[in-house]
Image (cartoon, rainbow, N blue to C red; front, side, top):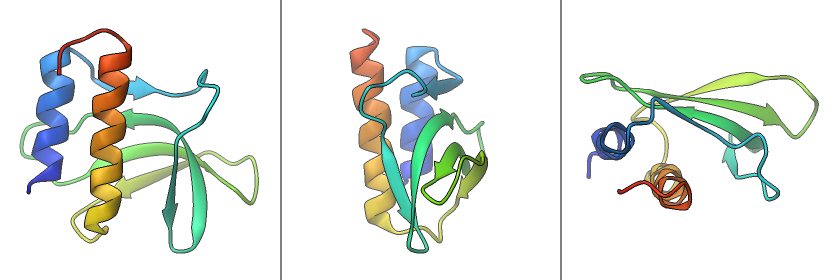
Length: 96
């Protein structure tokens, strides 16, 4: 499955260039290389892009990091982000 294009199409179809999770009570998280990150934002990839950028804060301190998801990330991480995007779009009342 091509998660990058699936996420792009969902966000584009709903009219979002990015999704922000700053004011969520339950912050979404993702783990990369043994470090847990709190996700603050997801940016929609443009047509033909092979990466997705996530604004995140690592659990070791209050430092804003940009994680770039590419095809080397695990399929489970891609499914997690895809489902997060889908659920947030639905929560905001837009069609997926």
